[in-house]
Amino acid sequence: MDTSVYVFAEDLAGEGLGPVLDRITGYGAAGVTVAAAHHRTRDVTPHGVTRITQRQDGVHFPVPDGLFGRLVPPLQPGADKDPLAEVRRACADRGLSAHGWAVFLRNPTLGAAHPDVTVRNCFGDHGFPADLCPAHPDTRGYAVALARAVARQGFASVVAEALHFATFSAQRLAVPLGPMDAFLFGLCFCDHCLRRATDLGVHAEVAREECARIVGGVLDGDLPAQGEVTRAALTAYAGPEVVAYARARSETVTTLVAEVAAAVTEEGAKLTYIDGTGAAKGYADGLPPAGLAAHDAWQLGVDLVALGDIVPSFAVLGYARDAARVADDVAAYQRSVGKDRELRTVLRPGVPDIGPFGETDATERLAAKVRAAKAAGAQGVDFYAYGLAPLNALARIKGALG
Ligand SMILES: [Zn+2]
Image (tube, rainbow, N blue to C red):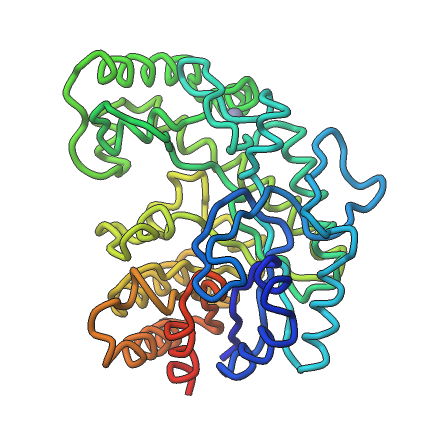
């Protein structure tokens, strides 16, 4: 079974490339999945040289001339020194494989500089600077160029995160939005999304008006929707035009992923696609709601059956405390994308999926998830993430793979 540990460039720079790779080799992992393009965040880094680490939007390599159009990724500090080339060499010396992890459409720096490429809600607001709309031609050109640039760094694979629509989010929210209200509030109705849906025969403007009427009502004090988002519940709540509009977004994502996959293949690498549904469901507490990620991926515009014909490899986010849930998610992905596609599972060795209580059987619980993923059809397991998990949690990887 192939294995890797997700690592951040800042952690390699801080703790030292050699010591980190030695540690990862000691865990028994076969490779690293290193952040080549990431987004702004502030992380507690329990064993880092700083105990809190601020990460920025942008790429950890020099931007090639002539590849990007209007949207050019910001350069990370130290990117001009080409740190990823050193990572690749050091991995090769140790017999470790190196995968390039890229966050595609979450980039608040680019969104703030170019608000027109960000998603626009049913009221006409560009309120989400981090979320670049996958229907905008400039965003699409950026995604293809970024994929090409990461592949050219010489990685075995390009691991694509956030290459789809995003979920609704707000920093402050004092309105009781139900899951379906939040879903409607998060739908993009930019000119490009409206046009694509109209071209597919959807009454896009009717869908927008219906979303604005429902969400506007809740903002005015109507009772929020109850229950999780399902197609049936959404049809009953918002009507068939809204559901048709939401479903039509998958054409936008599928065609974009097809362009990205083709670019990665042309550059001699392989695309591994991460559908963020598993994170939307289980990232916060490891307790995903009942619907399996593969069944709810349409909510991000992800059509796994269609992508199964295009993408050679998928990473399933196994953000769950329960090993049986990880197995169910992997099995559902395999049914959607087909048995001939590579399936990997991303597991967290520490909280919230394991511990902090029950430390005595923590390693066995991680091992049970590795076994469950493998039995359900996963050919690879990746552990997330080196800089975020404490050393005692990371040490479980060795036992879990042993
Ligand atoms: Zn849009």
